[in-house]
Length: 368
Image (cartoon, rainbow, N blue to C red; front, top):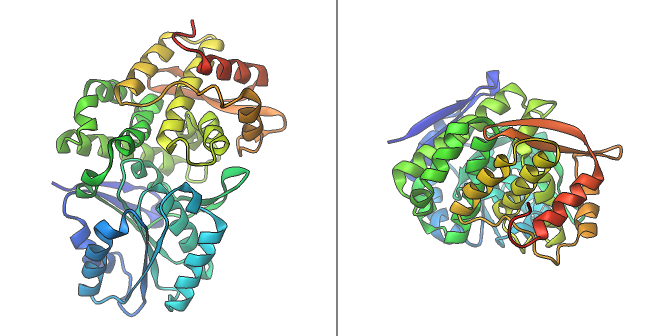
């Protein structure tokens, strides 16, 4: 069964396909979306994913008549850098990519972000296909945000650039280690927390099936998560307003990643702690404390952390947040839950409240 969702963006609308055995169809699908066979295609992957799936993608593209160039870089967030970006650009130039070529991102969020930024900037923009191989990438592969990190801040150098196609082969998820599975599910439940109360509690009830990668449960969860994000993106492609709700947990989460050198915590783990922090902030602002209790129950059921190690100091995290794109004119912007399944964008959060949340996240046991 292949599930299909469309991201509605007028002439730039594109499909998200979710199902099994889709890697073997990528060549034909590239022809369907209009990439000419005379223009080389660049497949970008990392050192963990490439040995598993690159040959299948190359074979499908070659069988469809394409010339294929590949670039594999070391896996990990540290590779989402301007240095690796330049290396991929060099491969594209040497491979003879032209204005009708495309970049195919085969891997997780790091691969998608980096390859997408290459696609957005090579010859001022060429074709782009997302082939996510992690659960986490169900979020990052949809919506057109592409970027690399700066040592002082995550995703500071980037663009909005939509793909022509997102191809989500569920078979690739079976090779994920348990920690990566849990990390990806953080962004799945996030979509429920921001816009779909019923789906958020569904994730809690079906946590064991999701962690076990049960195909029916996982297929539904990814379809629902992608559909929620697609609807938000369609209404606010360039984050001038409502799209910011997708950043639930990301202000604190990005700071955790930066302080940890983009390696101590996986992205979903950091965002999970950030979502717990946002729920604590909601309580400080007078919302129901049950928001925090239920949020933590959902995150812990999915094997995710909700506490900060003590070595992540208040000062270090606050300094990292000052470099965040959501910090403006001395005020901090947070996505604050009003209830499970509903959030508000609050742009006048006091720094003292954020410091208080950090202190609570470091405490053992209940913060109440």
